[in-house]
Image (tube, rainbow, N blue to C red; front, side, top):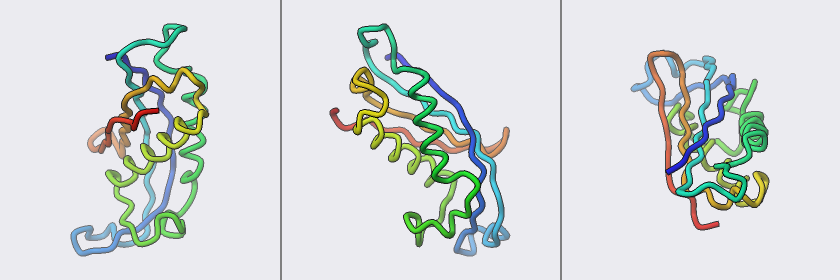
Length: 135
């Protein structure tokens, strides 16, 4: 299995509902370092996993939807505790949609899975990975 990873970051504000979250129930901020790994069993005709420039642009586009915003105010996330785990899956979901729409080029249709890692700090992170539906 081949893989290629691109990295970016986003800064968000949010709050959580539920006693399990303690003081994080109050509005607070987080800066996430986001790693997005593309995987495929064989390289494309240019010996690439995916075009790194297009991958970086697509990740920036996904993160721009969250960056510098209060996630509590985002209609698409209404009613959700936007935990690191939840956001990792949401980034995965939005990137999968961009791949399916052809934003990463025809060569990206050979990508079989994605892994998204959101790092809150050097001590804590969460990830989501799954196979992509056949493109």
